[in-house]
Amino acid sequence: MLDKLPLRTVLIVPFVLQIVGAVGLVGYLSFRNGQKAVNNLATQLMSEVSLRVEPNLQVYLTTPHQINQTKLDAVKLGLLKMENLSAWEKYLWRPVKLYPYINFTSVGNNKGDYRAGQQLSNGSRMM
Image (cartoon, rainbow, N blue to C red; front, side, top):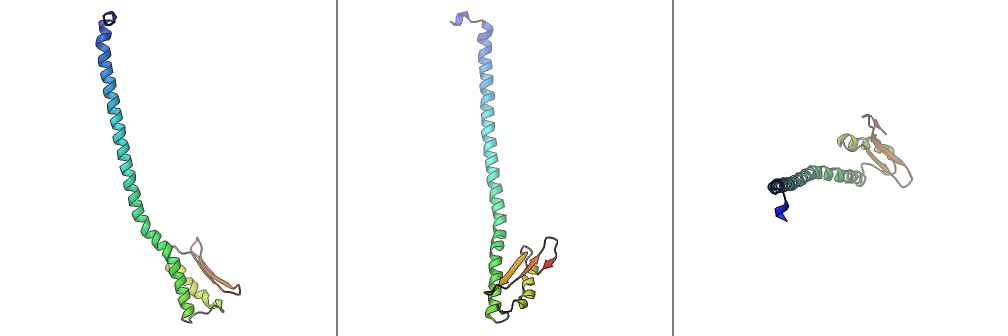
């Protein structure tokens, strides 16, 4: 079988197979290393984002509870009454002014009376 093949084919085919094999192996290894590098970078980026977001998220989630607690304290201390919500109007401006990410706070009573303090997107405040 080999004696019928031309000498040129017998010499060229092994070299071509070696070149194709070497290029294929290098391509595969490069792809794998690139994939590992991208995964490593993505993991680092997600960790960094998580470290930056978590403190802000904690503040964002605890602030409304703190504001509600101060409202409850004002009622318990007798500073503000739930029967007269008009006195709350000035008080409701304070959290909106103090906390830049709080743009709305309100209070209501059993009779259906309701008061709110709100900061609009243009920066003006509204009752």
